[in-house]
Amino acid sequence: MSLHSNPTAHPAAELVQAAKRYGDVVALDGVDLAVRPGEVVALLGPNGAGKTTAVSLLLGLLAPDGGQAQLFGQNPRSPAARMRAGAMLQVSKVPDTLTVAEHLTLFASYYPAPLPVAEAVALAGLEGLERRHYGKLSGGQKQRLIFALALIGDPDLLFLDEPTVGLDVASRRTLWERIRELVQRGRTVLLTTHYLEEAEALADRIVVIDRGRIIAEGTPSEIEARAGSRRVRCRTRVEVGEVLALDGVVRAERRGDEIEVLATAAEPVVRHLLAHDPHLARLEVRGAGLEEAFLTLTRHDDDSNQEAA
Image (cartoon, rainbow, N blue to C red):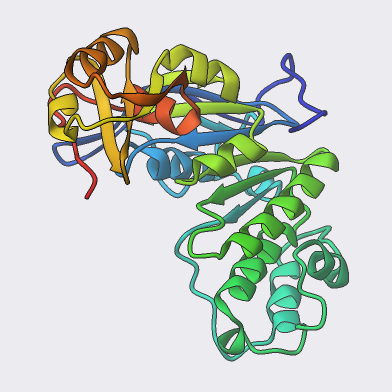
């Protein structure tokens, strides 16, 4: 978590009533989003919710159809604003034939005051790989090089779009530590991720976007509390399909002789289970975590419940 966030400072990046359409598809519908200096903001949402479009507007890769996008108070396409931002995007076309050091040296030449290559190498954990060609790197090493390329300009604001996708657990946690080091240096981070554990571990503030609109915003604990959902777990003979049919049930899964239920209220579920299984045991009811809160917030009335195999 960041210790340097200033809630009264002018936003490092901002969307004001931003709208974007792709033909008949509304990608963003009047979105207001502000990323303040020194904070880590995690932008969460289902596939197609509008996360990538929001990041693209802030980077100046797309222009809004309505509203405004600003980067350090300027048009995101302004060279002065762009020089202060770094981006690690999901699609990065990096030539296989250049070495780690060659890539970093080339990217450093684009900036007026870049980090020394050795410092970027250290920040990304690439020591000993400077002479290795990109095509010879492992998947995790390639991700760390893309991370280093985003850092080499010594940006004030870093956009990380799914930075740990495809990484194993150890590599993911290593990258988290690198991100925390940058935040301790006073950098600002806008993170998009599908790993809710990642958002919980890194973010000062979480913004949930769904169907082009922001539906929730707050600290991880505030998001969990806002969802108001409960997790019920017990050993029971009651079938999962029967539980899924109950009002307020978001998800139900069987795990061995137990079932785990996510519901907007625990009492109706518990009453049903007790009434239909006199041998029910090991009953546990607790507040939902971030994952359960996310599922509750992004659930739609027209969604069908899914039963796990």
